[in-house]
Image (cartoon, rainbow, N blue to C red):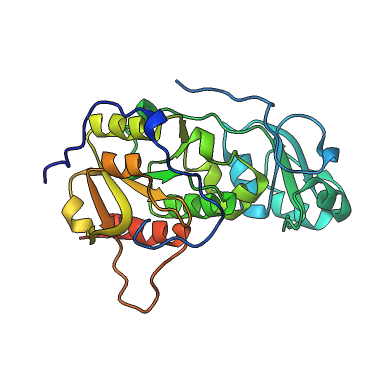
Length: 282
């Protein structure tokens, strides 16, 4: 299959006039990179009482995955007496606190399950760092809801994706809400943050990735047709879809098969369906 033939010169971001997504509306299912340590300058949306650098991760699965990740810098580990029983085999023991303290530290309405960690954001990778990893690469074009990104990370881990690539300026930073929705996958699937998404896609193409945009009007996504090829799957923002330059840089545009009465899926659900189609046994 020949690549589409948009200009291979790096597109100028200044020509991309697409507006950022206005909210977190559902997205059509047919819609849908040197390592840098980022220390202490970014915090989650926790209460001011959190004190110190980093942000709070909460929930059993997210905390267990962070504790098991040797790359994760951990400052504090807090748990209620009941929740601490689930971490008896951990090499790091929690400080026992009451549930009200966790309620104050975590984000509003956070389901912390009696346990949280104050951590540093993980190191971000670059495209050369993930080329040798197996599985497809997921690319998000201005997906802004941290819970959607967390859910996408969870699907990426479940289906063996190599990495998640986002545009740095228009994607949220790590947060407790993202980690909770990812259910541990934030510490499993590496994240790449790139300034210019179109140039990042071209860099993936130079590494022999076939770039597939998930968007309306595309051909039916068929995993068998990608046998023997590395795929970078691009999903657009909630409600807005792929932006023009992103769409033009893709090698092909595809959509997932939906025989039912619904015309759209949330972006995280569309990502799960598309990933399954790409990795399912032929």
